[in-house]
Length: 233
Image 1 (cartoon, rainbow, N blue to C red):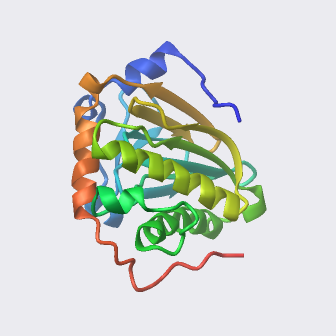
Image 2: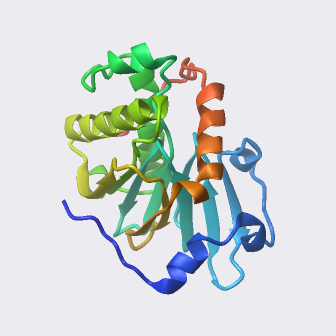
């Protein structure tokens, strides 16, 4: 599958702008208060921009741009072109140590680590279905899972294996992917058009991404919330 890569210089300029320069106003909602995402007005764009943080899920029917930074984490972008709804998640599998990650298998979708990934995918899909999307019309693009140095290299590899196995088992219509590799990424997604822009970045520019993911990794509680998600048919 080919990766959708539309390269406009203005997009790359925007990708490297700091959030402090981009943010002119934040309207906190319940999930924003929890740190799942942050919405702000872009100074040179008429649309709202939404940054999805590690562990976050965001879905919308508005004309917005969703973006995130990815190291070893993965993001699934999904949309229904007819209903003009789309969204993005940002997650990783919570391994306790290197031994656990080495012995995890992608087909072990009922393991504690895999259940966390399944939950992140189901939340995204269910939110889109609740907005009127049809499951058979949903299309997906998958990003991230960089093989960073040290222990995180295994985490990135296992995240990629998980999301590909999940997509296969759930028969998701994956139309593009940009997974693995040795560099972190910055990702932009237009949820109504289904367009995605990816920029690989050097490690010198990726400190904030790595720091966010490490904090997320340490804060994860493998116990999935008691109100387990059930997929809409």
